[in-house]
Amino acid sequence: MVDSTDWWRDAVVYQVYPRSFADADGDGVGDLAGIAERFGHVVGLGVDAVWLTPFQTSPQADHGYDVSDYVDVDPLFGTLGDVDRLLAVAHDHGLRMLVDLVPNHCSSEHPLFRAALAAGPGSPERERFHFRPGRGEDGGEPPNNWTSVFGGPAWTRVVGPDGMPGEWYLHMYAPEQPDWNWDHPATAELFDGVLRFWFDRGFDGVRIDVAHGLFKAADLPDLPDPSVQRPLLLRSNPLACDREEVHDVYRRWRRIADTYDPPRCLVGEINLPADRAARYVRPDELHLGFAFAFIHTPWDPAALRSTIDDLLAASTVNGGPVTWVTENHDVVRSATRYGGGSRGHARARAALLLMLALPGTVYLYQGQELGLPEVDVPPGARQDPAWFRSGRTRDGCRVPLPWTRDGASYGFSPAGATAAPWLPQPAGWGDTSVEAQDSDEASTLAFTRSALRLRRGLLASSVLGREVIEQNETIGWLDAPPGVLAFTRGGLVCVVNAGDSPVPLPDGEVLATSGALDTGGHLPRDTAAWVLPSTTNGSAGR
Ligand code: NOJ
Image (cartoon, rainbow, N blue to C red; front, top):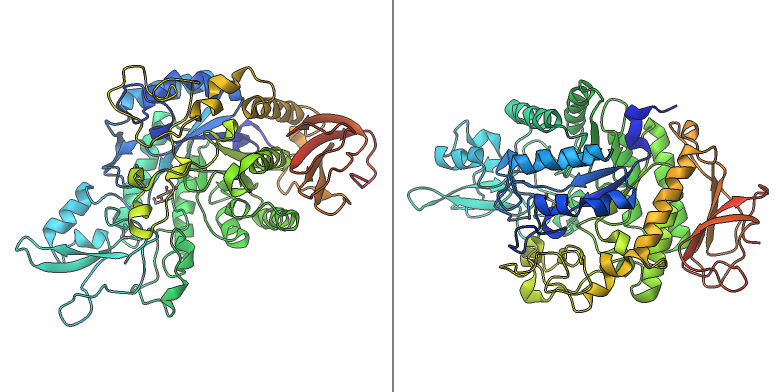
């Protein structure tokens, strides 16, 4: 049985990327006041919680994931007072709030890194990071053969006050993001304080950036085969992540989270295969970890089924629920990833209904409720640090939201704004806006709202009653035609047609569909449905 302190087990959480949500002060970059102004949209969706990506003080080299002060707000986004106001508004509406914490690295402008640079080789200040002499005759070669997730070497050489090149420091991401040395006891102490600061302020939980990172193999050895490293995939370097020591950090954080009433929730960004990721989600470690295996699965019925099985099986090992997710600010929008155009769009809606039927918690990324596609941001306008180092860009899923049909920024910035949106919005963006979809019953926005309302109702009823959401809740696969996924969860049947032709639905009441049924009442391809069956006969779509 769950109780209200276990709200995170079946919650729907909406991810807000503040830069691109709403801009209240007209500088072209979204801010906390903009989120507060548009919060009615989030409340109207019917989600349970909101995760805010970093708003802390940052030079913005990686759009907030380079933090120079973990316990203050970047003026670009507002003030601590704005955070307090947003927390109060969210809590008044019964929504929980998650803050983003970036423990693997900080900003090269962080005072402790500035102090390490100033203090020089061999100093205690440098021990807080990974400084090493270079290799080669004049130390001109990096200390090992690791590459940065954003491309290029994972090491940058510093220049001393005398203008002479000196030691190198490790950065698994951009050079502006030096990695903390987690073998130094002061690092854990620093982050204990950061956690408590945001929990004391009222945040209900924390999303942990690169949660499988933090520790590196002792002495930072060479990778035997450096060609295994892939851009934008930390896990391709096994010496730089998923080390056993990291689990002690999460045990320590869980103890802190559990001292609060209600206990605070820990959600890890653990981009590992399902079996390895599940090792972080335990009764004494993290509550949740994003199901990256699901994001990486293409629109293919066999692949979807086996990933769902893997994730559910892995979750039973330690009893943490699966955290279903198909979009975030780092991946190509699902409508585009699943094939683009009207088919990709239909599949993204079907995938949403699929996720909402599965046991566990669901994370949605802002704009997913509008069915936004990936935008092909012109190369000259791209901002992602990965673009400049590896030629890969995540800008296309970060384009500022369209709120209105018309206007210079489609309602993202106020009329008379002094600057254009930080990433250009494409022509026709207003057709996908909240305003354009708000009263259109066939829109993705209306579909998302009604699916969330229905799910909430089912969870409160005997169909998916909360009493069935116990640890290890699973699903029962039903026989189905080729290309079709059909399963029961509690008293609900979910059918997803990932094949090529329409299929009949099981007898019963059709509660929701991700697209219109065809004239014969059949489920078209690329469409999902929820059915309350009149009888349970162990098959679907015959
Ligand atoms: C994962 C974040 O989601 C991503 O946006 C960021 O670039 C990296 N971690 C580094 O912090």
